[in-house]
Image 1 (cartoon, helix red, strand yellow):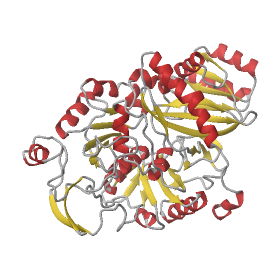
Image 2: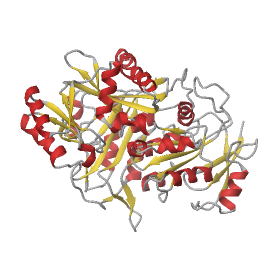
Image 3: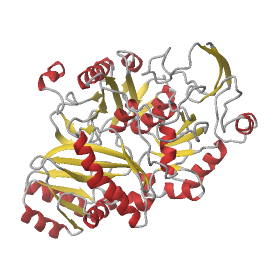
Image 4: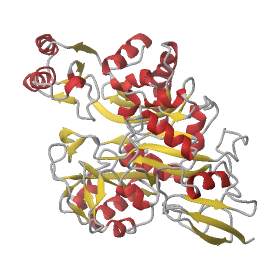
Length: 530
């Protein structure tokens, strides 16, 4: 049966849809528009309101549009609730604010925009790519380091859920301030975020609650650290205790490299206060993997597995980066291993944090090493937010209502929740500015992004560090700039689609690894990109 829908377009990314039952059927009804659009009480500008009518012959999702489309038609008449969440919240409508402006946040906005329970997505500060894609309305003028400004924005715009992307605002206590005034926030308190903010704290939790991890010692004195390194021998791992933007880990293959790492952190202070203590850790040989779980303080549910590529160069060579690519699922994390990770690492941590009086609410990201000698997982480190670029491959595969699931976590209601994922695989190839992770040039022009997204089905480009120049061209403003992401029936198809899209992009100032997925695919699959 044909149905008519009215669509109010406030911007390419902020869309409110009404059906025959009346405007919105949501908490953002006429009062929202009158108070914030027509009376001008908000200091944040919104583009001109336009009206159009859409005729849709079916209400089943994806009938007349590609399921891979980033701005697909959203039918609110026949939305089914998320598995395990029941029907009580089926009509609950949400305005969501995503905090951050990188590739991870773009992926979160993309998934939230597709969430049936989500009416609108804001992103602060966002970036040019997020805004241009239509996946969120970006608010660059909102100071996310000022919790009172964030609270004021949430109240003015009826925000019902805040999703904090990066670790720094969490460690500084943004979630504490938001929760204190009753704004549901997906992200841990500052006390719980210490799992990432202090590697020494994380290790102490492991010690206390029997969580398997590498042997270690913590030092603030360079001479004592070097003596311990000499006793242990190389290879060995040196880590800055605090946040260092993913660059505070040195895998030293020789004693000299280890001594230099200690001096750079404790004597030269290259990481500032984040490196005033160092963790000297046993080198674990094996295969790394990323494991994510949503946590509501007491319960945890696993997400799909993923594997990151940290080193800057092909064959896992060169210095560590924030991540040069990822794929999901990761074959190394079998179902048996995933169950073991939940039982031996994730759940003991959740229960331990609760026992310590700082319940963890958010996404717990365990960086794992599957040891070569034992085949068992050990915890390398915890992050307290989605990984970047792992978030990109997870969000493009997620089929559940992300907004509703994250709100359930905020309310302590994850027990019994299950998630739906698209079959097959996904891969993201990160394009970075030449020179990254060292110094790099800003302002280089990037072209043919639209052509790249259209090169194959299920390709999505997530922006991390882009801006628009005066001529309307995308330019690179960061180290990691683009996350070219694709889905496929299997990893090979996802890989081919991602690299086909990468090769379409015209950006002389950028580079990328040509071997993402090499651990899971036969070596001859990479000949085409050699």
